[in-house]
Length: 459
Image (cartoon, rainbow, N blue to C red; front, side, top):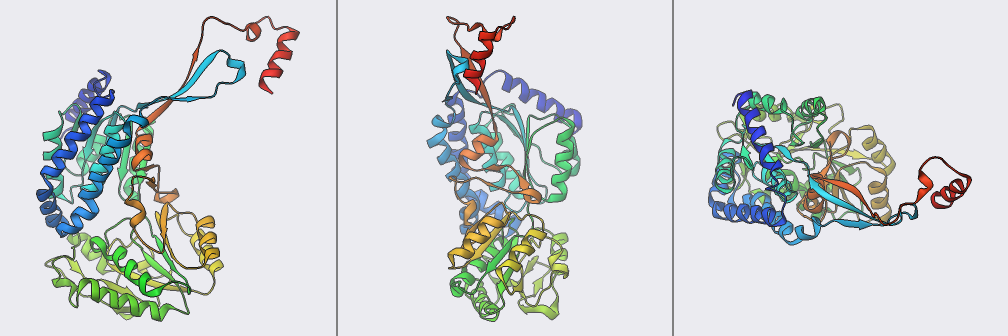
């Protein structure tokens, strides 16, 4: 689309929003119901699109994308009537007689830019929150996942008129044109590099943003951990979606005393979960593109590979790979891996771990496997990260009861459930002052009695 076409589209949505058509609770609930029914209608096609783009099995597609989206809609349908209500707050004595309250209101026209790794979930879930909050939305899905993007466009076109919700497909040109427009809110999920450009463009219009980025999320395993269970859950979280998950454990920081045992359990779990030849497993995903395939392969050091490492350029598949004796200076530790490579580093003391994490950019997630309560307290209190799990991986994002978001270099803002409603809402603070009483002390000329009264009211 051209800049002029996109500008006309945003103006059309702004006119629709200003008409008040999205504000009533009934309109929001109707939008959520239509979206839910249409997603359920196309569940088979969603699975097929995810299979085409990322090699996801129907089970994984539903578990990690469609099912979570439907769960978010159900949560909003249940709780939205309470979310939209005005919340009365206490009024100070100096404002007697008044009623003070906070009123949630939508931002207006929002832009949702989604990534390719979970192309359905990370498009639809923020849309659910935006619609619940009463906004209109322009969606820009990734060009790297064309089958899912095409299906998302089909679903949205069937559910909503263009002036309410619409999809803009394409690549960098369309991204640039969209970011040149004045939106009321921008929600972006993707890389840190692109996130910086989004924030820079938003600053030109003073547009608020939510940035869901990524980073190198550590997985700490201490010597008190249940190593067998830890390996099982780490393998699940790391190699899900062929490692292309923003909150996947990027690397393991393991107590040196249990490293060898942990590696044995991890290699056993890879074989158990993916088979002796993962490249032939129909339920094991693929890398999104040849460009990313080549980048990931360049991070594998054969001399440090203790399991896996094989690949198939025709199917864009890379085996679940484990690397031992990794150092922070190695290539695999210089960028977010975003693929099926698991580097293992060791530590001698908890203080060493905490100091190291403090020295690195804030990660989107942190995982700790430990049975020691003091270790858990120290890590969760002193380390900065977006969110995470104790004795598990990934699952903290699969709930509408907690916000999900980054911290520092891994992003800003959060969503899911009430946090998502708040993200796409502005809360107006309002004082409703009654007219039957008007205290004179705030008006000039000021008198001594006014001075005494103001000190009494405001101290």
